[in-house]
Amino acid sequence: MGIFYNFVLMKRKKRVVIIGSGGVATSMALALRDHVEIVQIFSRTLANAQRLAARVGCDNIVDNLGALDLNADAYLVMVTDDAIAEVLSLVPDNGALWVHTSGSTPLSVFEGRRRHAAVMWPLQSFSRERVEDMSHVYAFVEATSPADEQAVGQLAAMITDHVMTADSARRRQLHIAAVFACNFANHMFTLADDVLQRADIPFDAMLPLIRTMVSKLDTLTPEQSQTGPAARGDRGIIADHLASLSGNEREIYDLLSRSILNHHNTKPK
Amino acid sequence: MGIFYNFVLMKRKKRVVIIGSGGVATSMALALRDHVEIVQIFSRTLANAQRLAARVGCDNIVDNLGALDLNADAYLVMVTDDAIAEVLSLVPDNGALWVHTSGSTPLSVFEGRRRHAAVMWPLQSFSRERVEDMSHVYAFVEATSPADEQAVGQLAAMITDHVMTADSARRRQLHIAAVFACNFANHMFTLADDVLQRADIPFDAMLPLIRTMVSKLDTLTPEQSQTGPAARGDRGIIADHLASLSGNEREIYDLLSRSILNHHNTKPK
Image: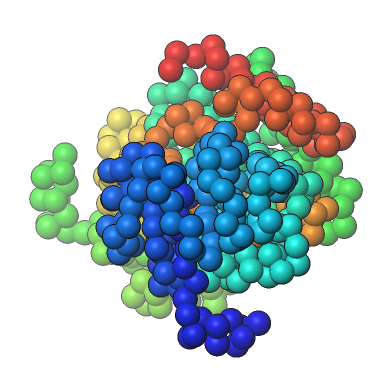
């Protein structure tokens, strides 16, 4: 696919319209700029479109969907979840490939509105301020036909080697995994901060430990790199810690210690 | 204290004996080497002492506690928790400052064995393979007298600006916080990995999200940077996720979502 794709690319770069100017649109446009021709950028706020256009070297910006260039090969709809259907209803189907980048909006949002459509969900939390190195990001794609899946896969392959297919069911599993790995892990930091505040110690004292924990994931699975009283089966320390906790913190410490004990005793090493 | 300390340093560097050659000893010796004179390194395994000695430019190594140089200013006992008391009982008190670096061994291990003693606990997980940049690490000190506390504080201040006092009770709070921030956060990664394995997706797909989560802690508190369904109060998504989980995962998802909901609704923003 690589050689074929390069051949196509040498003939003519794909013409892409960027719809949106937020975090996803910014990182995606910057990652794509050398691989496609960004022919137009739409944002409801012209100043935002202008700022992004300046960064990717595009001189065609619009804040009115009626003025959208309908002659491009692909349209990347990178707006809030609520606004995706609205954009699709305000712009007629021109037969090009239409792509949204939301993990929580199903492919069916395109149904009856677009003949060629796909989801390309880059698994990262984006912000307008920080441009992401997309090459480490996994992109999960789904499309309405094998041909469209190939087309969106080629687009995704321009920015990352990590392209996988994922339908809505698989995206839900990814969402749940991300809740555990990010939202809940971050809540563990909050609980640690609560404990530290009572001892007048800044949360920054945890940062070296946290950074080391995360850097271990480069070479070990999370289960392999698990340490601490529960992983060691040190029930004395666990009881000692539980005795000095109460309420919500105690309940969580207890449940998670038991979960780690189970993981590390019942699974083959 | 900085100026006074520099004056003392110009007169004569402190003479320090390193007892141990593992992860803590390696990073500590390397961080101290420009600030003190490392006069001797002890390890039960001579090859390990030799390897560390070569890295810090010391030519006096021993594998026998009976041959310990008793004319140094300070002794850093960086051996396993179990071995600290043994080292102290095998070497007579020479009136110098004796320091151990364990977070879980109380200061009282020195009682009746040393006149001048202290704990200096660097809050990091060390390994012999990776040398830590100690300047970001918090060092928690405790000593048997104000004079010894000042002495161990000066030693700690050579390697990091983050020196705080902590008695056993405070070190226990730090331990509990570290269990939440590291052991439990890492277990969240394991649970995410379990979910992903069922969907045939590599855990690496989570790494960009995890790295972004951690980098946000440079500027925000964990509570400020909390995202996800529970932080948004999105009970629909929570119910949807719970419906596709069971057993231990379901119980943890439920308890932690409720904990986040409570944190984000009852605390002042």
